[in-house]
Structures are given as C-alpha cells and as structure tokens.
Length: 248
Image (tube, rainbow, N blue to C red; front, side):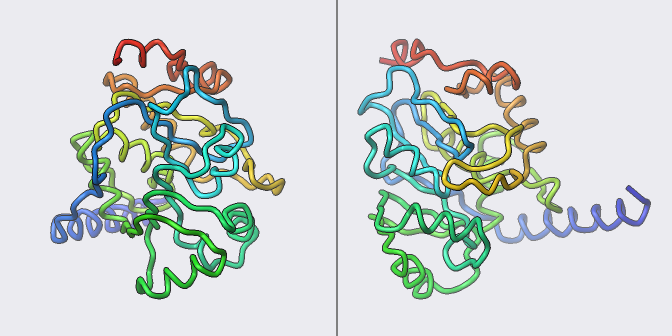
C-alpha cells in the first residue's frame, strides 16, 4: 500500500468514526431476547445440522441460506439478514437469492443498508413473494454498533477490506440479544461458492471474518461451528451439543 493509499484510508476511517459518533446509532434488538442457543446459518456450499438440534434452538438465516434450513425441517427462520442488493439487484448472486427465497417467509427480516424508502422495499420483496412478520432496515452504523456492544470497540469499516460480513453481523446480533451459545454453520471464511447456486463466486470479507471469529473465541465468547472441516481449519470449537445440556 502506497503512502497516498494509506492516507486516504486514514481519512475514510476518521470520517467513519466522526459520523458514528454524531449519529449515536442504536443496535437492533429482538422483541423477546434469546434465551438459548442460536444457529447462524450461512450459505457456504457445506453446512451441518448442529448436534442436538431441536425446537429449543433459534435460527438466523443469511441471504439465501434458508434453502439449507428447509432440509432440517425449518419452514421459516426466526430472523433473516438480507443484503440490500439482493432485493432488486440484477447480478447473478442476487437473482439466485431471490429464486430460492421466492414464496418463502421468516419471522423478523432485516435488510442491510437499504438506500430507498420502505414502500419500495416492501414492493421489492413482494415481487418475489417473500413475507415476514416484522420488517426492519439496518444501516452501516447500526451494524457497527452491534459489534461495538459485543466487543467493546468500534470496527471502522473504512473500505471493503475492513468490512465484516452479514454472517458476522448475525453473530453479533445473537450475542447482543442474549444467546447462550452461537453455533455457525455454512460459514467458512476459506470457501468459495454458495449452497443456492453453482456460480462458485468468491466469498467477501473472509479475512476480516476469520480475525473477528478468532478474537471472539480467544475472549471466551460462546461461539462454535457445527462444521467439522471449519473447526479443523479455523480453530473454532466444534459444537457437540454438550453446551446446550449445560445450559438446560
């Protein structure tokens, strides 16, 4: 990175911190806090039904990962996080997400960084018949507040290299809302491709995600993976179901 690139990044970081402090964002909250284990299901090509999975688990789906949840017998995730460009975007990834979500539903739907009005958002979701019990939007600074509430520090998203993924947003959301354990499945920072298509598109923010997950584990947060291959590569503890028994 050249001197000018470092300088520009520092300027963007300063602006981000200034806007964050001015806006004083509030983190999104569950109407009823979680009181047990929460699964965060991503859309990596391989995901695993967590050991001991039953009605006591809550499930958060990321973008099109609801397709994998259906195989577990989950008709509707408790929460879905959807990136804004999946609603009206013309790219292959967005089209694939809408295809698998067509006619489906969830409990609370959070659309991340939606740049338009709520009426247009509702119309966009209705165009592919996706329904929900509650609809909310989250801007970049509310995402940062979630991380801030959990880690006690601000993650400055000055550029694409410093941003964390929607999957990590869901992990922070679960922790901030009382999850006794957070089990990730279908989230593999080292993988390419998605379970809902065969495009083999590169996964974004993988380096930042891996560092944050390592920090969470090092600091003792109850974050696990249900995917054995991810545990072996990343150092995340493998979920065996024992923690749920301890919490019961």
